[in-house]
Amino acid sequence: MSRVIAVSNQKGGVGKTTTAINLSACLAERGKKVLVIDMDPQGNTTSGLGISKETIGHTSYEILLEEASIEEAITPSVVEDLAVIPSERGLVGVDVELIGKNNREYILKNQVDKIRDKYDFILIDCPPSLNTLTVNAMTTADTVLVPIQCEYYALEGLSELMYTIELVKERLNPKLEIEGVVFTMYDARTCLSLQVVENVKDNLQQNIYKSIIPRNVRLAEAPSHGLPINIYEPKSSGAEGYRALAEEVIERGNELE
Image (cartoon, rainbow, N blue to C red; front, side, top):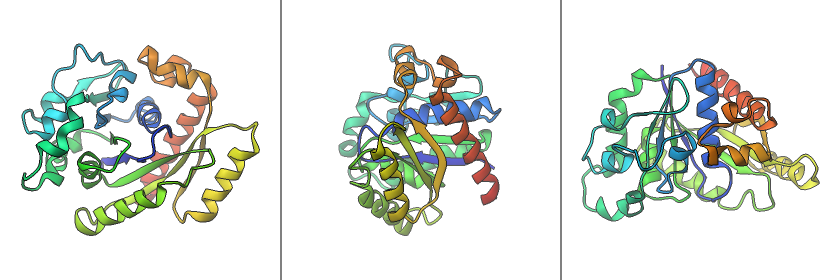
């Protein structure tokens, strides 16, 4: 049975897109059939998986405006068994464009339901804000994966995200659950990273993944080459971190079944 996971945190710079790119690539590496839906207007997941913005066909923006079907927007990536629905800048104004539209919170879900049986995993990269795009992602998803940066303000804004998830669960998607929290940009040389991890564990009653993604130069370089880390530098600590996370996500799915 396929799983739809929204990767979300409205706080920017926490490794959300990096996680969407590299977790999806590592799931595909494990032989899973994966689709990534880029719902972030910046389109970094699209380019980070080797899709040039000049050659993009149909996009998530056109799906939301119902100008293209989801099948038309599916685009192969540089990774075998990993396809992408690209993003475009038009998503910035989608809130306004969808005003007054009936059931606008379910547009993405209605499209994804048509193809979800073709994939083991569908990951949705949400924008770093709580808007119509994020609500559509959460209405579509089974679970929400929350990347948290190992820095002083890690918990800032997290309560708002949890509130939004609860609200969506209560009013739009009763099956929505927290997939878990994953720590990113961990620096073993600082006491602060360790303190943040302990602080979040003490204050957050959620599933916290054991895999911790390190701060890694190769991980930062990979998107500029249009490659996920497991292809760009397969033996790096960043690649190992995301492989371990993919393993945990697969195991958690087996537990939930």
